[in-house]
Length: 146
Image (cartoon, rainbow, N blue to C red; front, top):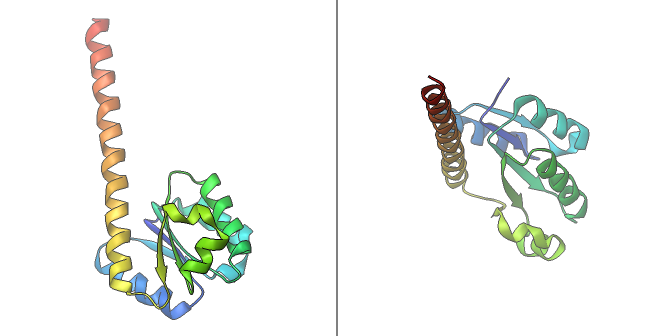
């Protein structure tokens, strides 16, 4: 079943708060503690195919960074947002993180929910545009066939 957002966050209270804010924006979500392991994270993202994945990076950042890279390679269509206790240390250990939104803990959950909503809507618009282009192509092919 498709969900708009996967919340892979350490604190269940934070999952609940962000989930509440997303629900108020009519977005669907699923949550998981990253300590559940990489196979659980992969299963969650594979099963629900979220537009956006929010993931805690856990100090020393190397292991959780490897998990994040694996998820991004397996699900290139998803947008990723990260949270970290020390974003500068995370960036020093994970240089690829420079291209991604990274929130420092504690973060403003409203700002996070706003960014998630924006990223998810952009993906939906892009998908609708692709669908429209495919339909236009099909219509043109049908016109030329007759």
